[in-house]
Length: 170
Figure 1: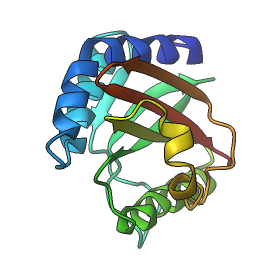
Figure 2: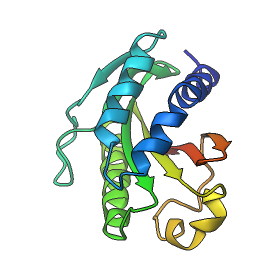
Figure 3: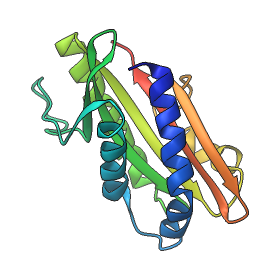
Figure 4: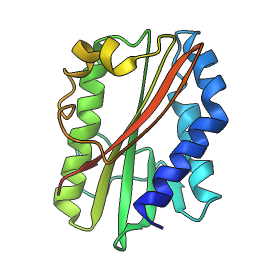
């Protein structure tokens, strides 16, 4: 599997689920766990060897489990994914949680040397210009100024959904 395959898969998942994402975000409740299972299913039924809830191999005081792992993701290296949902009602306390995911992934990548860390942000809004409208909030995320590995989005009359993925440097 290649990065291009992963990017295409994310776009397919987004196209298939955009209406659900927009409807769910209207509730002001989290649906992150649901998205994790949808992403896991999409990966595992499209040629990726994915596993849910993998345990971090390195000793981490930050977190014990990630959201998803993918075997042989890039150049025979496994990937470990952390996913976070951001929507119109997401509060500032979640910036710290997103940063914790990043730190846990950095720790895993640095201590195992054979893994790739991927931070996935699912953003959904009833507004149609997430990156500009949320710019001040998003810039508080520790890795926001880094270039994403990939980004897919859909804009509709009801709003916008955006999935961005960053690779954690080893």
